[in-house]
Image (cartoon, rainbow, N blue to C red; front, side):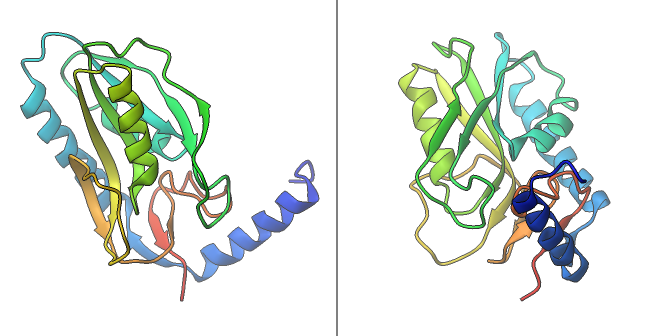
Length: 192
């Protein structure tokens, strides 16, 4: 850990303290079952697809879910990715920043955008709108977590949702706390 910059080390120490006090929301078994259910829905719906579907994880949050989900699909897929973020290792959002746009041509293709969480949906909506602007024939989305809250949400809904959580800051299984804990094989909520 000595190679971490001092500010990152401070964030890491804070993230470790947050984890110590966090509440387990979903364990590995519950997450696994949820991903099985999503894969089953996708396999049923796209078993007769004639052209490979483009899997488009949104980095960094969608990385872990996509790694688990894609391995359970039994229809033709091509894997791409994009990197769009509003959080930038912080705990509150700002304007969307595109770091990497998809590399495949999306013209006349079916695209599955994969992300970790649907909170207010602005990042997901921006990625979907970009795919449509690139003339994708159909754009679907899959998220591991949908947050339940009364705040204004983007004018979209996710097509495939793994689980729901109350309006709390959650991390693990792709979701981070100040850039840390994405690798956890469970989902935790910051203690109130």
